[in-house]
Length: 86
Image (cartoon, rainbow, N blue to C red; front, side, top):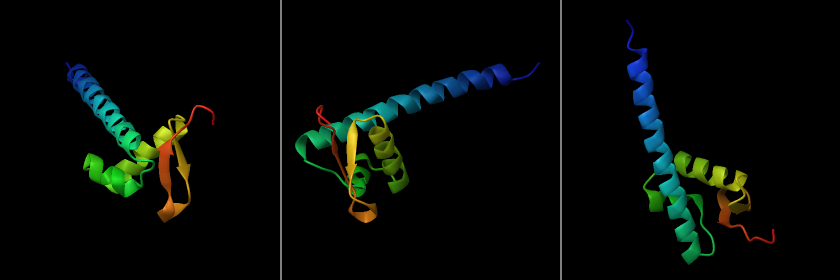
């Protein structure tokens, strides 16, 4: 008998926890942007205590889901909340 079933259960729990953490991180970004007009990647790094790669991935996902708007290029890029009229 294999242990594959036990591994699947463990993976599902890990995914659920990771998804909840991502949701909390996205909520924190939106709360930050409710108080500030814009954010840079490093602002998000400091806010969430994550590495630059994680911050970029979250911000990219939020832009893709049309929650945020990215403005500028590379080092000058900033993010702001999307207005409903956009």
